[in-house]
Length: 102
Image (cartoon, rainbow, N blue to C red; front, side, top):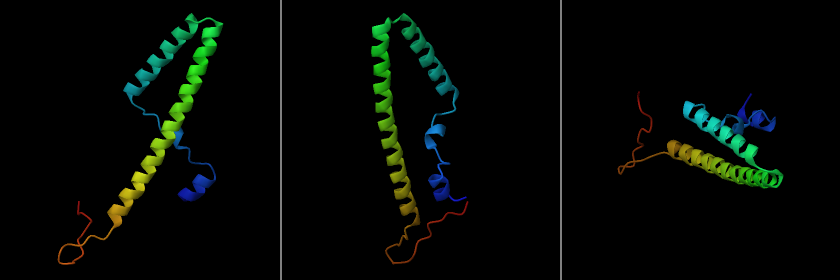
């Protein structure tokens, strides 16, 4: 199935696979989870509501940043593709070989 059909059918969800699968990420995620749990356990009801509001606002902000980073990445990809497929000529107007033999 081509990428357009997958995108149209909702089979592509990049956000699901965007988190690094490194040990460093796992440790940082675990540390955040443990620290958040300790903080939540120490809060009274009003403080907890405020903490939840902060978390929700932060999640909204993070989502907006991630969308922008994704948009910039796609634009960069298109620009890179465009440059890689451009015909390059030298000063004698001869077509330069843009492919490498490796």
